Amino acid sequence: MTRWLAAAVLLLFTPLSLPARSRHRKPPESTAGSFDYYLLSMSWAPGFCAQPSGHHTDLECGQGRHVGFVVHGLWPQRTDGTRVENCGSASPVSSDIVNSMLPLMPDAGLIQHEWKTHGTCSGLSAADYFGLIRKAAGVVQVPDALKALAAETHSAPQDIEGKFAQANGTSDHDFRVSCPSNELREIRSCLTKDAQLMECPADLQECHAGQILVRPVQ
Image (tube, rainbow, N blue to C red; front, side, top):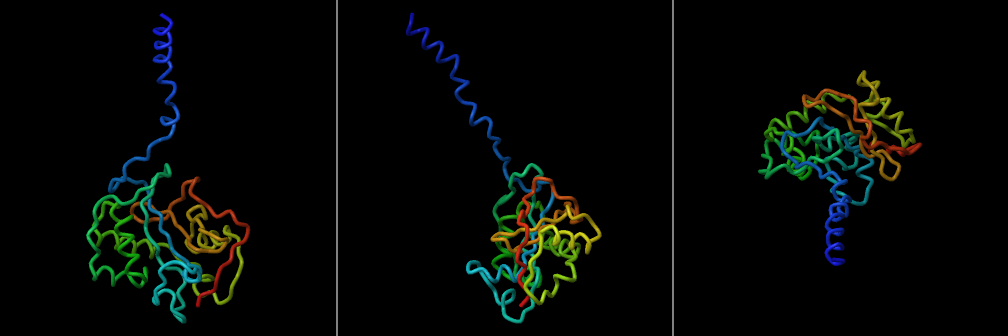
């Protein structure tokens, strides 16, 4: 009887021994078209090119190129913070599309990577996805003060976001500065699915540094 009672008690409490896993929400599958908004990431070339790692092309990092912001990518996002990537097999982007994008994204390898990792989640063809990137890059206006920065400066991230808001006639909540190692690396803009500026979700990652280095255009 004692053995039977012990087994019954164990069976009764077994479901209660498995709560830890159930509390962790499993991210939904990355399905093409299943997202809420886009994040346009524009890399600050002087900051990127100064890093010892990374693929530095002459188009972006060559001395005398005077390159400021370039498009890093247009990323489908969910408002719950779960990632949307690699939504299916991806054929290589055609050379015609690559060549048309190089003025905005000066790295052919990056163009292929962005299509495979993010573009396949857009629900668009490669031609339409990169067309949307061109539209988005035209929507987001770069402040004059950052187009040809001639000297190294230090600035609060909020000031940079404010300059973008002023240049675009919108709220600084539409922008986020990315600042690894306390220097400007990217500005990220939140966009609707038809590439119009929108307010970013409150929990989207922000730069919390007081002041960050902004390297000059070379």
